[in-house]
Every structure is written in structure tokens, then in C-alpha cells.
Length: 178
Image 1 (tube, helix red, strand yellow):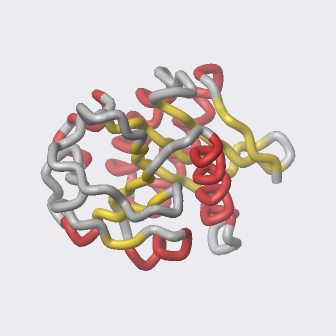
Image 2 (cartoon, one colour; image 1 turned 120 degrees about the vertical axis):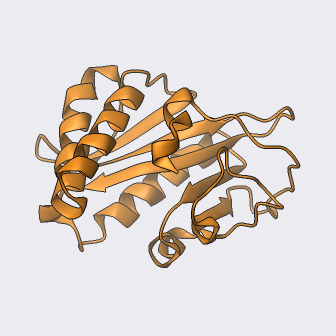
């Protein structure tokens, strides 16, 4: 398996992977929705505010994750992990966890303070995420299931309390992604 930081040239490949993965697990409508989101994010990869990692087997993209910067008025680096996809043929082999750990390691090298995500606590706890109260860091949008808001410090220090709602990249401002 080869890990790569992806760029805009991989937009179509990323969109196809996410569409396929989410169509397989959640149905065609969800596949198109997340495929479109991943395509929009991939079209703006800048390796600063939007970072995309991929894992390849031979020359085939088998997994991908995005990290997008959350903006606060204070100077702190917080990135949100979403979405994540691993092709069905490669699931249940630990590839998703390895890919997430690879991405988190890269964020640490970039002096990122905190990583957050919104998802299944039983999965994300395997890669160090813990329940995160919105009294500590708010999600960029109101959440439909707040128990899925998770975070982890990448500095070894406790996650700092930030009393303001962050601004996320524009692609996540659509209420359909809550």
C-alpha cells in the first residue's frame, strides 16, 4: 500500500471512489451526495485548508480521506476529518484506520493542535478520537446527533476550550451534511 497526498488532478478518481463506496453501503442517493461533496472538496485541494490523502494498491485508489481547516478568531489549528472512504473490497482489513493514522501523523508534522470529526464513536475511538463536548469546541453547524462529535489533541496537551462556533470550508455549509 502506498500513501499519497492528493492534489486537484485526482478529482475524478476521488469522486468515483467516494460515489462507489457510499453507493455500496448507503444506497445510490447517498453515493451521489457524498461523491459530489468529495468532488467539490477535491476541486479545491490546496494542501493547506483542504488536504486529501489517498492509499493505493498498485495504481488503484482504494481509500481516501479529507481534512479541512476550521477557522476561529484565535490562532489555533483545528482540522475536521470528513469524509472517509475505503473501497468495499478492501474494508475490514484495517486500511481505514491506517489511512486515518497516516493523515493524523501528517497533521502533527504541520503543527496542527486538534483533529475533530463527526461519526461513529465505536469506529473513530480506534484511532484516538473521544467524545467532544460542544462546550469545548463547537461543531461548525448544528448537529443532528451531537454524540457523534469527536476530537483528539495532536499536541499531547488537553483540547483547549474555544467559545465560538468555527467557520468551515464552504462545501460543508449545506444542511444536507449535518
